[in-house]
Length: 348
Image 1 (cartoon, rainbow, N blue to C red):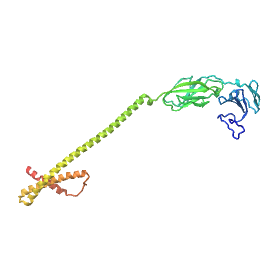
Image 2 (image 1 turned 135 degrees about the horizontal axis):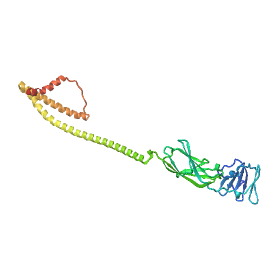
Image 3 (image 1 turned 180 degrees about the vertical axis):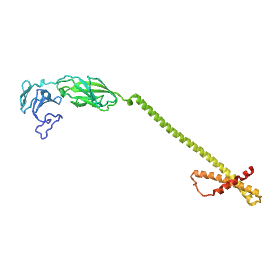
Image 4 (image 1 turned 60 degrees about the vertical axis):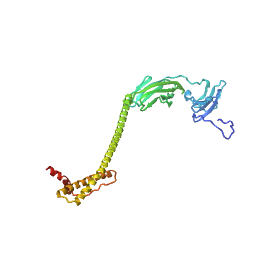
């Protein structure tokens, strides 16, 4: 209670977050102003200076059931508390906790792969095989006073302390390869944390794929794949560049060929006009007329080929579509034969 006015309608209390026995039967203040609380089977000391609770159940071994009789102090400062079996007299100054620092030893290791326990003799270094990374380490504080009440805590490397109560073993699952500092601390039989810390070096052996050689191999593989990918992209760029250059060169050739075709079309047209006029208006022998008709026919063929070249340019620029028509192939073959008939006759 922290209220200064006990007659107030609102009384304030302070909680220390400490659970003792469900029923407190007696309270008394000693000469040092500490408060002793008697419950059903336990005596608890409240230190007013440290604001802490401390159970003395282990000291008195729960031999008594404390009564609701009012406890008193005598002239020497001893406390007298009533129990169901008589009067309990003790001096608050005589109740001290042991300060013995018990050594902590590692007693064994158990691998989950073979489920066998391996007894150790206070090992300071443990080498964990490659395929046995699931294991349990057992340890103990060599304090034979209230040994069942000793509590433990551990930490791995620089991590925080993990308090595991009275359990004297720690299990690790799939611990990565590397070197670790496994530290253990414990309380003594009276529940006081000792300054003694046991340090065990754990060396978890790596598999081949975790070694430096494997990492170098991974690096080489990554470099090879990167170079291969880079080469593929470079080769694709080279092919695209080559195709682009060939297309540009072909474009230049086609343009030059078309320009020449335009130049050829004009003189052929100028030749065709006089030949047509001579054939239509001048009296000619049959042989001369035949020769001029052959000239006219080849001029028309040349103009047709030139027009086809120009049409190809239009098709290439998607300005002209393909038109399909039926033709008599016999007539076409005769026309082609007539173009070479005179030449064949001269050779005969």
